[in-house]
Amino acid sequence: MEPPLNTDWLEEVERRQLSTKELESLRSQLRHRPAELRRLEEEMALNKALASQRSPVVASNFTALVMAEIDRTPTPSRAWFQLRMLSLRWSPVAITASVLLVAGVGWNQVRVQQRDKVAHTAATIYMSANVPGMETLRDFDAIQALDTTATTPDDVALIGALRQIEQ
Amino acid sequence: MSPSPPADSDEELMHRAKRGDREAFGELVERWKQPVQNFVFRTLPDPDEAQDLAQAVFVQLWKSVQRYERSARFSTFLFTIARNLCLNEIRRRARHPATSLDETRTDEESSLAQSIPDTATLGADQTLQRTELFEKVESAVADLPEKQRTALVLCREGELSYEEIGAILGTSLQATKSLIHRARETLKARLKPYLDTGAWGD
Image 1: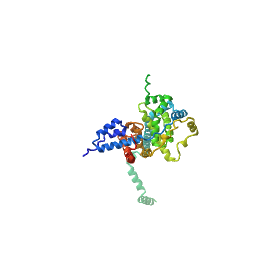
Image 2: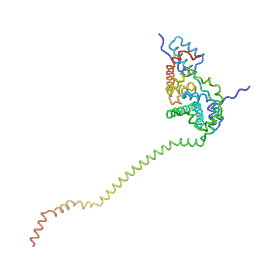
Image 3: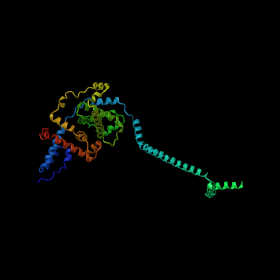
Image 4: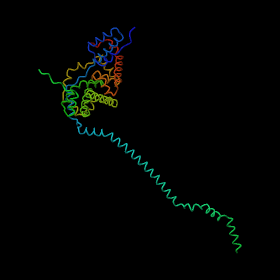
């Protein structure tokens, strides 16, 4: 029975064109492994096919045209490049500054809201300062009761009766 | 005869270009024009538009030269620009299907292109002839999903490592290997009748 396909050599064949000597050596090693040998021949045939691809002819004026085009192209100066690199180098700082700025504005908003709450509370306290003192409030129920008594119809009727007696 | 001095690395040339050395930049264009044009052509299989877009890649490279860090490999930087421009062009075509890059050229650009003659295209007809087999391969590659195709092309044309391809595509090493593997499996399935014939020769 034929041993399992060992393709350790495959990467090398895929990566580069083997020399005649290398190829002969590999064929010799694989002569008792027909499946691997067949695979090797397929890979070599593909390599040949790829190597046979035509290469486009490079024009003799290729370099001259490139250099002429370069002469017409404004070259980015070293100073410009350094400025750009500087801006790229500073970009993390700019990002951090932006994040800090946003965080600062947010924090300030929270502080303003807290101050509003404190001011509101202070206003409430100030308003409650106009309420009568505790001494007055202690007799509040009695005063309210008197007020209620004075307005009851029975008392009014009694005062009216007394006035009639006096007359 | 004394040996020629070792060529500057791409990274060194890019460093010089960063200081405004146009000659160094021209050397980079010379070195990488073919791989970039191949890459663009595999993405947008039209030789003329591939050339225009490949030139745009180098112009964009010049504009982005100050962004290049020496620690990064040049090819990764270059092909990232190339891929982005290709994707932009694909999106532009999706929005305006009938407009080609040539049509968006200004008069000044057209006159510039005409003023610098191309001598390499003379006698290149034979090179540009398509055979049925080549067309099948090109068609199969062009039909791959964008990431699979880009990974495969960068591996074959750009000779970039899996790590570098992953950096361009924004994928992990394992995902990059998987993209290339799946692309190859798809191609093998589509091209099986042609691969079996052994018509590709040695």
